[in-house]
Every structure is written in C-alpha cells, then in structure tokens.
Image 1 (cartoon, helix red, strand yellow):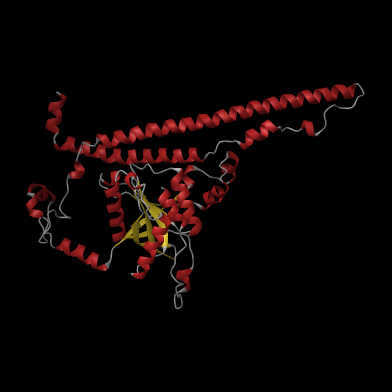
Image 2 (cartoon, one colour; image 1 turned 90 degrees about the vertical axis):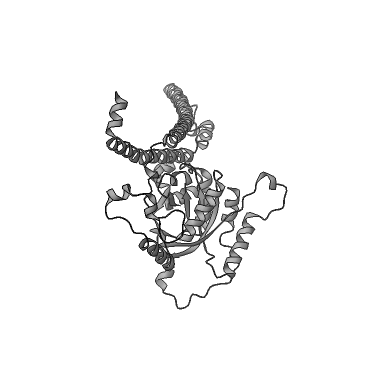
Length: 388
C-alpha cells in the first residue's frame, strides 16, 4: 500500500503542458457530482488480468480518464510497481516517479493521462481498512472526482463480475481532515457506517468494433429453438464457425455446481473474526466510558463536599474556603481523559466489513438454495432412495 500512497501524492504533478480548451462546450467543463463510472472494456480486462496474476497478494494500479458532466469515463489504467523481498537491496524507481514516467509515456502516445483514481484487488470483500480510506482521501484532496475500483477475483469465480466503484462522502472528508472521530463529532456530522463511502453504478463501455465482433460471434452460432433440445444435444452442436476451443456463447452448466461449501465456510470464518474484533473495539471504548463516569462521579462528590464546607462556614459568619473556580465541574484528570477518547473510526470500518460479509453470504445463500431445490426436483427418485 505504500506504493499507492506515493502515487497518490504524485497526483496533479503532470509534467505535460497546458491543454488548449478553446472551442469546447462550457457545460462539459463544469464540475458536477458524479452519478456513474464508465469503464472501457479494455480497462476491465487489464484490471482482471493484473489482479488475477498477483492473487492472493493485493494488486493496485492507477486509473486514467476524464470527468464529463458527472460521468467519470475511465479509458486506461496501469499497474503500480510491487517490490518483492528479493528486490529490497536494489535501487528501484520510486512509486511516485514511476507514475510520472508512465504518464509522460502515455501522453506521448496520445493516451489519456489524467488521473481519475485507482484500483485494488480484495479477497472475499475484505477491503475495509484505514489504508484504503487514507489513500482515497489523498486522491480526493487532489482531484475531487476520484474513485477507487475494488475487484474481488474470488467472488467473480462464483459467476458474477465483482466490481465496485467507491468514493468518500463529502461529510466524511470534512471530519477526516480533523482526525477526530469522537461520539460528539459523529453525532454532530450525522456520520454512520453507511455514510463513509458513496457507491456509484458502473457501466462497461465497448468500442464499436468490439460490439460488431460480439454480434458477429453471436450470429455465427445456431442454437436450437427449444430448451429441451439444448440439453439433449451434445456440446459439439454449439461449436461456432470461429476457430475457438470453447464457444463464449455456449450454455455453461458450471454455475449449477453444488459443491461450494468452502466459499461459504470462509465467509463465516471471516465474519466470526470480524465480529470478535468489533467486540474488542466496543470493550475498549466501554472501558474508557466507565473510567470517564468514575472520574465524573468523583469530581461531583468533591464539588458537593466543597459546597457543603462553604455553606457551613457562611453559616458561622466566615468567608467561604473555595472560590467559584474551584467549584467548576472540571479537573486536569477529567480533561486528560476526555482528550484521550478512543477513535470511533475503527469501529465504523469494522461495522462496514461485517455488513459486507453478511450481504455476500445472503447473495450466495439464495442461489445456493435454489440450485439445491432444482437438483431435488430433477432427481426425485434419488432423493427418495437417500431418505430411505
């Protein structure tokens, strides 16, 4: 993640000359709130290839594109450098300098060289951490429309492409600048775990020539008219005229596989560990709160005793012993305790991680039960024999 932080610090240091914007529509140059992220198909393929090659290590990279009236168009990307243990003694190029060199090369080749964010891989949705927030904060401080694309190769193997576009909310950006995540500041800014990040819809854009190729492949495959005929014919029937080993449009029955207990077990294991971390964080904050209540009660008893002594001396016609300053509900110990209130940021992050695991388990369990009922209805005689 250090390479990502270095690259984030280099955002905005584009060595290219100023661009001539004469003749452009002023509405296109106006900055509007983002409502979607448009990824070119080439960008998606590059991200998938980079993340899969480096799995299970976290892979990160830079996103390049342009903001067009609230639609962030990502047209290119490149990976960040990763240093292994064997390369620690070598004088490798610094991450920020590497990024600048890549931008210069892309500019010379007439590619988009405008930084619009970054991407990273994750495993089973385990991407909620302070490093992610710190890096995204640095990007948005430099370019307000920056986003982070999170890709999960493990979830993608279950049949659905797992890509998420996230950016920090404006309210969280304001409170993160002060680095004070106390209960008072959270209530004042109405900050909840779900309001840390904003999730944007992703639209994958294909070029015209790629769209034409897909239509050509689709037309060259003659599928039977009936679904019953599809499953009765051999797989050789779906061989297209294009010379490929596997047809991309042939019916794929891999999604009907029932042996996926490992995927669910890992989710439950990670969920249990995260719940335990959340409990420890709550226990730490509750311990601070108990100490605060004890100190406040001790201070109140001291103030009550001083007031009683003053009233007794006044009744005897003597001057009070304690002045107004000594009767104030404050003390150096209480002030120090209030200043050392534990940050609630980690608790917010863990809560988001728990929510992510729960949603992924729900999304996985629904189709899993459907496949089980489908298998039961297809082979009722086998189920009856097994029950006997």
